[in-house]
Length: 327
Ligand code: AMP
Ligand code: MG
Image 1 (cartoon, rainbow, N blue to C red):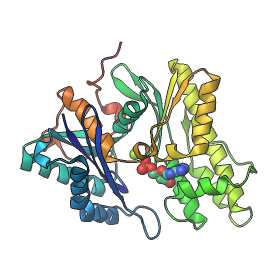
Image 2: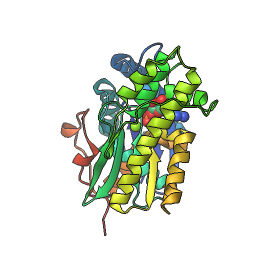
Image 3: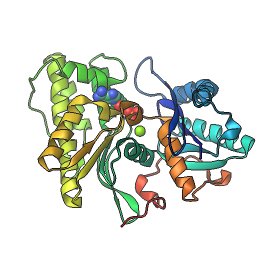
Image 4: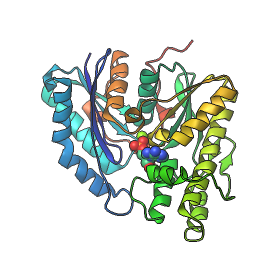
């Protein structure tokens, strides 16, 4: 079976192609704002402008014609409405033109599924930290339950905001990481954990107030140490509660080496295994959508055109996981 997947929930337009045996293509184009954060209309315009190019690049990389595919999967949500429309329009057009199955998938679940495929994790507790989402997710009784999550903004969004205030370019996560690597010094700021939930907007404000008074390196390091410790502590609590011996880290922030180090150490201490997918499958990508589409289609799950509208607020725990048989 060969499935093409389209990702367009936020800044990335991605097209990937998978079969059961192989990942056949992974192409992307990322919207980079001149100033500020992601402007919904401008990001959508970027996606429309690059749609054909990225689609053709993916087919070329896989050495396939569209008619040879078995299905088209797309990110139906959650995400920025204007951006979601682009992927949905592309997917519907391709499915109708080539008479292919259409599968609208949940973006968050696709992160977990590609994480499992690329690392061989079996039933992990997932820490999903990205530009728009920050959640701890675990499969229990037929659904991926959200055990902990941010109470305000996503961790990647917080990193991007702080970097912007310090006059570094977007995306801010890698900039903060480079700064933080240059010092071991930290200042005392709040530690934003509440049970298994966490929050970052207060921490961003606290750090913003230090700009100009403290070195950027120290602010960056303090933000990383406090925010990453909070999500890793929440992950550990979730694993203890669920009696889980596997952790999966995914989302764009999962590329961060300090965060990986913390997760690795925590898992070592509890005799658990930490799994880190390759960076290109941590950040938003079309391949994960293709893979999620493939496992759903194999379980006879598909989407008819009438119900293929965008779902900007679609939470992963709303999806009945019919493609995995639990013990
Ligand atoms: P995603 O939404 O999953 O594509 O992830 C994008 C987010 O990941 C942005 O907020 C980036 O700032 C963040 N990010 C990317 N690379 C890193 C990194 N090395 N460290 C921390 N955050 C990162
Ligand atoms: Mg994502």
